[in-house]
Length: 324
Image (tube, rainbow, N blue to C red; front, side):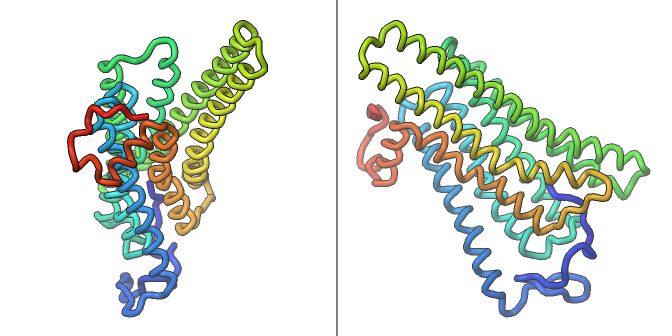
């Protein structure tokens, strides 16, 4: 999701490219800053791809992980995998190369993948929160989970189409295009971020309140000893810590970008392109952190990762292994 900018908005000094006849070409000797930035962003891409590959292989290979809940995590991992595999490299080329003028077709291709996959990742996180709410009393069926996955990806594609089409046709039509583009830039963030965030906050708050009430009830009815009360308190603190980590990391990564995107829609508000690109990278880094948040918290995923990394799964058939 990139703001509309022109070449005149970009400073003449660039760490990797130099201006030549109003275009950008790679300098013969890239600066140290340019090299370090490429190494850093490339490392983020590699970590994102490897982390989500571990999640995908674990869920597909081990039968113990074939559950409706893990299907949602698998869908999230697929979205995050393609963020690392496609969006990260395209964004590197966009942020550090000649994609400083957003009229180029390459930049629109990059934006389409960026919007689709980032939205899919966020919506899958929202679906996981819904699944966790119903998991205690009434676990979701496979059919419901499949529908949720299909809806998440379909909405992501529609948001990307709605965001990009007005921009493609902007030069070929009248002022109505501006209205369409403005609506797309307003509705896009609502469906991509603000609405999922409201849903997730409400659900996780309700989960926390229910868990706290249940823990208090257990302590009052069955825990007559100090040891039992301490055990329940430990589980309650762990659940609280998990929910706080989930929402904290997600909001830390994506809130600055979408607030910046919203502010730049206001009159006379100009967001510097380097700041916008930096916040976009911060949001994309959530795809790198998701495997740690949604998988590394669970011991069975950690066991699966150890077996994959050590190469044990290539030494025999361990699909039926009971993961601890």
